[in-house]
Length: 348
Image 1 (cartoon, rainbow, N blue to C red):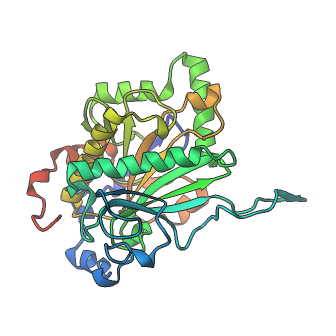
Image 2 (image 1 turned 30 degrees about the horizontal axis):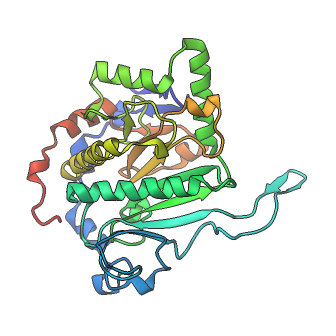
Image 3 (image 1 turned 90 degrees about the vertical axis):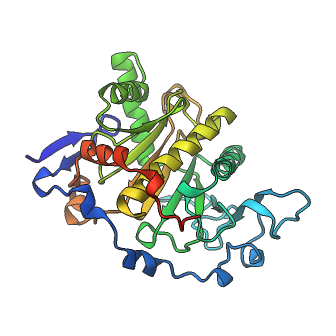
């Protein structure tokens, strides 16, 4: 039977529609479609080594010794987005006219070019390279958190055209805004309500219970837990939380980076193997910056992996209630059984 489920963090509802249930194998993408998405020619790719002049000047890079900025020799390279959604030098003031309110489009929009190899895939990066990417994420997060006029820093990775990736070369993005997203503010309020009611952390309790039940756990290590959430909005939606309570991603310690890189590679590798590398969005959820309060300290940063396997349509847009045809318990079981060792040898 279909079932409504409520997310304990957001309080939003989803429908787990077992009547139109889809088996995990129903989502396997065709190789034909996959090949059509790989249309970028390496010689003209602005993110490939040797084409550095096609991007704005780099603002950060991890490089081989004795190599100059904006030349080959980088391992990870960060540049301003050429088609930025927000601009750092935008000027103006907040305006209110009757019902309407506006702010200047000031902020930061950067691209993190994750690896020199054009056809690389995050789950198949050398482990050290995956750690370098996370080091770059942390460095840029900390850099922009020092700007007093910024309130929220969003790091995200889009893979596949359906998920919004306009270029094939592996990359992620950072957008820093002067506003706190309403969804994050809602989660912070809910966590504070839970703390007053239960005298414990909502997020930490959630991790403990998911680990105890085990039916939605995908992977775990000493520092992190990955699981399909109880009220998953999408098939194979997976959350990755640090065991240690930290409100900001910028608080992640050096010894955590390796375990975080490992579990992201593990989960993406399972998804790649089980569903033949589907499009996805990987998004960071973190507390606001420059707003250190008891409420924000109660937040617990994490990553959300959102495979793009179904279409959001009229009901979802009209109600805000997502219909998920694959129970998270079934999705987690399928992912835990996925065998990364059988991955295509052609991946780099």
